[in-house]
Length: 217
Image (tube, rainbow, N blue to C red; front, side, top):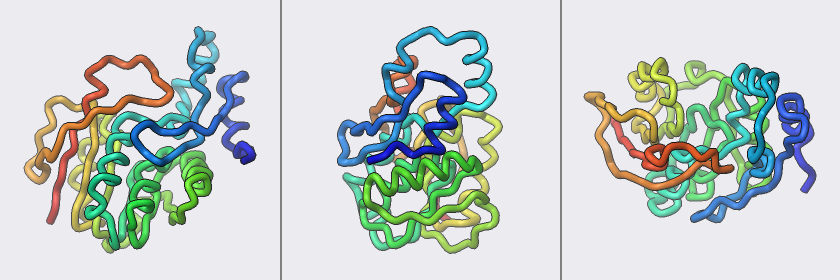
């Protein structure tokens, strides 16, 4: 399969030698277009570091919480089977694709970043599933059975969003490996999962411990 041109072009603008490769995700039947692990195994120049920090290609990685949530949905498809699902901050589309694979009636991949939505499209095609796409969560109607949220709380400024997810869906599943003092009156911890980011960024071991939280109206 040909590498998605627009995604590869964007990645090359950040890291000249970087390339996207089809990567099988451990513990799943899924695969994604991800940055080649070999491209991460070198020192970055100051200019490369600046570009990456200014416009990080989140969509070129499968983050630990997304991988953990994808595995969870495969093991417990009743969460999504026959339901309307929105994946908030979809990134690579891993959770959305997992939901579609598990039998969701409809899945909307939602992300502000046009490149992330392009990655979702490429990865949906790669996994032979159909998704819908949205760039504005608040423009969506209150019609979803479930809102999926993975790897969104890395920035504590996003914590107020927890109050908004149930304005568009009856239930929410949040997968997170960053917030250790997660306290919210609507959310209860369901499970603790293990996963790692791909390609492996040699993150602290604690970030491989993914907590899954649930809220409902």
